[in-house]
Length: 288
Image (tube, rainbow, N blue to C red; front, top):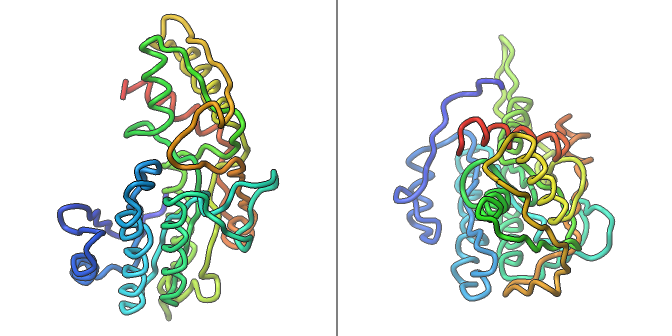
């Protein structure tokens, strides 16, 4: 992976995303060349009862960051979501397709996308889906926890998308920024300047599609292959979205087309099965 410079990781209590003054002063204090906003209100169901807070963090805060980065003449990188689409049909969504969120989380995220674009600075809005990793709270960890406890699994089988490893997203983001960093003996052009008309929205997900139930089955298969702590594979029953009601409606079709990312930057994430095998190997080796 290319070395692009120093990285400053900022979170609470240094910056409060729900407080515009805190956010503006935080950006100005660090004065970055590139700001990568990987923070968000991600409690999808809870957002139904906290729409104002979700909107402040997901809708308003990204716009403030983008305004500050325009003032600094820097690059704003903002992560978004498949939840900005309504989930209809079976074809992969493209970046200029119609957005119509079906829940409060999605409405806050599309507001953030629009706010970043409206700031009219150099920006990349990277929409991803079904993000998981070896650590933290995510679908992969939930499946392993329930399986190791011997719990039977009932998993939705009519929502389709691309499980995407968080590390793949990070690696791809670095590659994009590297390709925007242009230096010659006689001239040095910043990523923001080099981006130019390529500012905009890009999808960034793993290759391939699967249902949540299919993803769960692949997790269990990998875990068994690696000699897991699971004494017996728990039963896995496919169910419909209707069988598992949640406060927030979920999109059925979360397929995203990555063609624009590949054609513009030459970046394409690996197939989800390949990345899942690597994550499972990491978990098995470190017992995360």
